[in-house]
Length: 149
Image 1 (cartoon, rainbow, N blue to C red):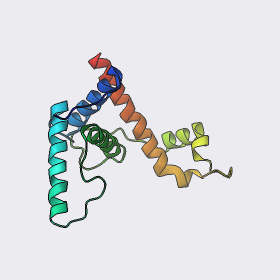
Image 2 (cartoon, rainbow, N blue to C red):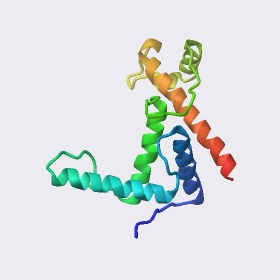
Image 3 (spheres, rainbow, N blue to C red):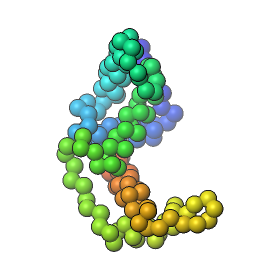
């Protein structure tokens, strides 16, 4: 029997909060750990069939349950940050130019090259937008964690 390996209760609560938010976003139907196990099995079967039919499979041939959970949690966050069309039920707060410029100004160290020269605002605009979305995602997860505790 497959099982999850959480190093702490906080890690488990974080994963459950992310799953709950992913369900709210419409990315998954089942936010339980059993649902993760079913999706993992399904993905492993899909990969096996692809390999057997000679198709290319990118990444692992087979996921362990903890690795699949990490894969899903990463994918959920990336879908949110990129405002994926897979997200059906979330009203993204608009991010205006003023907010983007304020973030750029407050986080200059993020936009400095190794050699010391700096990226211009115009070059960094897409990255800034995604960083703000990332913070919004983290805020949503924190709110769910407060509800779970």
